[in-house]
Length: 184
Image (cartoon, rainbow, N blue to C red; front, side, top):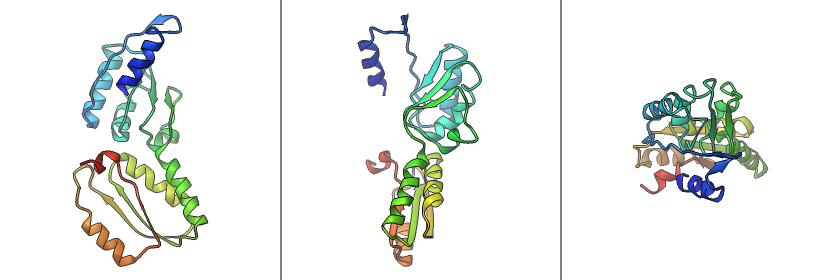
């Protein structure tokens, strides 16, 4: 994301709406408390007009209250926890991508069209996973025969969950996995 912003600013002559643009970068280290602390620094010390670049839903949720209602706008192009489009919606918050539950809501409809009757759900137990699961349960009209929320990001062995899935023999399994977990 950082390179994309740099490239865009280079193409714009480092100006937006005729004004010079200065960028500040911080690293949340994948930790909500660090993300919140860095966000507060950007808002209070650096006095930024926009805060953006959140990748992780749990970091975005922890940082949100440090921005909305404080003057700057918060823009996300990746993290999309469902509550920010519902009870946590705010006029200072903009999402340029999706809400996590949108894709699984569509998946529930597809599963219905395919005639799937019994579904097993698996997702990591953190903000994005917790947002994904309600999407499919909202639209899927069959039976949810099992659900596991796995330890994120530490869990790498899913043999116990796979044994449970095998024992209930569902027609389909919906498993949301964070890309970073695939490459570990």
